[in-house]
Image (cartoon, rainbow, N blue to C red; front, top):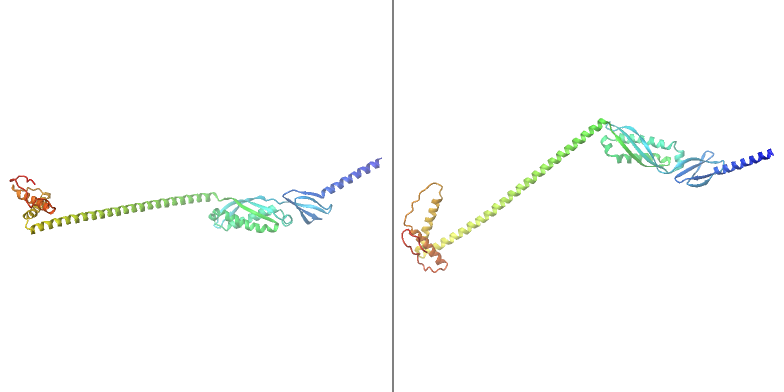
Length: 325
């Protein structure tokens, strides 16, 4: 009875061990992972996501490899630039495993290797640049780091997708110096812009004054043309009047002679009246001769334009009286 009970327990134990051994050969690989399979310690194949069965006792899973893109922080470190300025730099790297076997068996501690490789190349790349270039060309730094680190990790079955510099921190005294320099540059640009504005304003003012002078000169020129034209017309009228008087004198018209004498007499009196000095003009009471000359002018004008004066002089009433034309 006791022996039978022990055999029964032993059989159940064997069945349990068999089931456990069989279950250990069944592997379910989740999405985003690859498993490496080792046969007595030697890599044989890679298990992709899904259900897989291993050979009992002979095969086992070696490494669980994450095939998704991963991110690792790059610790901060001090870097000396080409112009001997010390800055503190940190960053972040993104990578993805493309070959599970290489990442498991070609390098020990993949993430630590990528971190140290990236830090070393950060010192190399940034150490070859000046501080100003370092602060203004982050994209160039990232591109150079990515090219170098990606080429180095290719043998590990890894693709480095991005490397980003997070922070570049110069020393405090250097930051203060840069702030003063930036302020000086901005003040310089402000003064240059102000000077350019004053220069442009002066140019515009000069252009306006030049245009005003040109317009004023053109106005004077136009006025001179108009004045010359008026004088020319007056001269023509005077010449025409002189010609008419000359023709009348040549024809024996006494009134024409009287007009000529009276006209010169009146002009002489006008010149005397316009003189600025004080004067006393003595005129004869007998002015009928002058008035008669003026009447003669009217008679000549009437004859020239077809009037009906018939060559008769105007009547003169008496001494000192006003003639009636």
